[in-house]
Length: 336
Image (cartoon, rainbow, N blue to C red; front, side, top):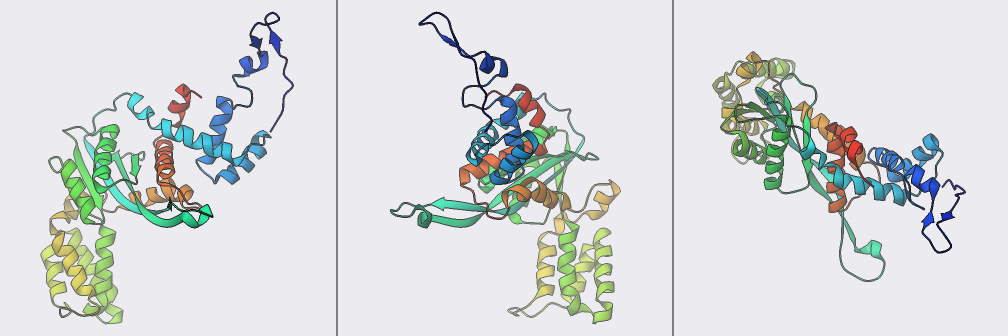
């Protein structure tokens, strides 16, 4: 830590103490200026707190403890989400893209007990649910993330849509891998103004798994591509008939054809690829999967990182706020 010799003044023998340097620099004795806090949070949001210490030393020549990086990162992480409510309402969108997916994150839970505290900790994995909403043609989605229940995730998805500019007149194009909870929350939030499409890549994976049952090795790619072409042309019944011909008997230990048939049959009302392509809408959910990597995993799943639920929620809020470009507006009004 850099030390500074400071002149102390007093008004009279018993008057108040004056600290001109602290007043001018905007710091408290032993405290951290807002500029330094911002640097600590900036590094702490992207790297481990220990690595953030080294980055601060390298860039600013200041030694700070990792505990300070952790404290200020979590402190401002709890406050930064409020900036969303202070922003002006965005213009209403005509067409919006909405996606939701889950990703496992490491959580540590503490149990009561005596003795070594480390033995009273349980490490587990929890699903962090990430959603995004953006305007068609835009490369700047608004993200939301939570460790909460499916109901909380559904509410967050709707709130994220509001922040992105979704209005009652907006058409919402949903995309996902077909997980029942995601589809249910989409229908709860947007059924009256949108349509949901199964990610084409996931549907293709099921067809690829079934291909060995349908054709000899040198014809499997050709069979799979034919079924994909049928899906893109909304010829779902033809795909189902092709799968019916190769269905394994009930109870078979391995049944990729039956799995593909059931997957597509149960989701046949959400396979309108022809209309999506005609409207130049995406048919794959790779955007939300990429979001998991750069919004959540690149920081919260680094080696050796385990989080309490409370701190994980705080870091999710901080990471999504940065991805939503709320960083600069927050620091323009942030207080220590």
